Length: 303
Image (cartoon, rainbow, N blue to C red):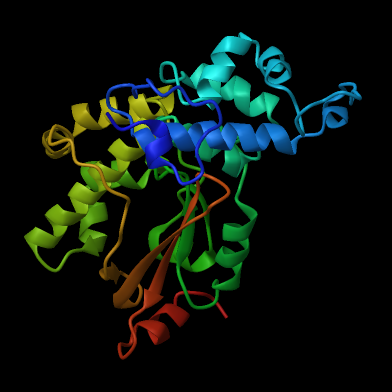
């Protein structure tokens, strides 16, 4: 039997030689989890947490019993995690440990992944707009139609070129702000965003569905995601059939031919930028080089 000490270059101190991993988890992940917890515990100073430094501490940082007390769990259970033993910790346990160890958001996400759980996605205020994406939205306003959505594809902000091309989304009620909803329920929307072939249109539909499934799972199927999925299934047989295929993918966007009543055909390369700091995305429609799109876009805005 391969032991934890045989598979780690930097083994966990006191690892149980008879330890067996929880079914479905990686041995190396469990050992790395224990090592990560130990190192983060040792990096904390007792005085930073309002604890007495003590003159006879045998190890740097906090003691295991101190972390366990702050995480509201038994010392024996916390020790089992550091020593690569015991059952897979729950998300509630991980949240308590992350708070006790004062983990940064990146460290917290890493902790969840090591333990075999999806990192929690923090809720954002209804009026929150990612500052980095917002800056970029304004910076490209003169040449590139762009908008910002949340991870469910609800439109949060548009620059003037995007509004001139597609109309205002941000003040619409309910699902009328949602790009996935429009794709599956509005023939007019598909006529504006014309695909080169039925195969390309089907591929776009599958990407919308696969991205929504991934997002709904990341959100823990919260009410907003669950309602959107339920309403789309009821409104679109195409969506319902594709949803049942259980595909998962990050949203990607290909070159689009957009037809404007004011200036005609616009050939646009679609680029999606996801913020590392929020759930939000910036969707850019860049003019395809060598076409008349740049000139035609310039005529959409008043002088």
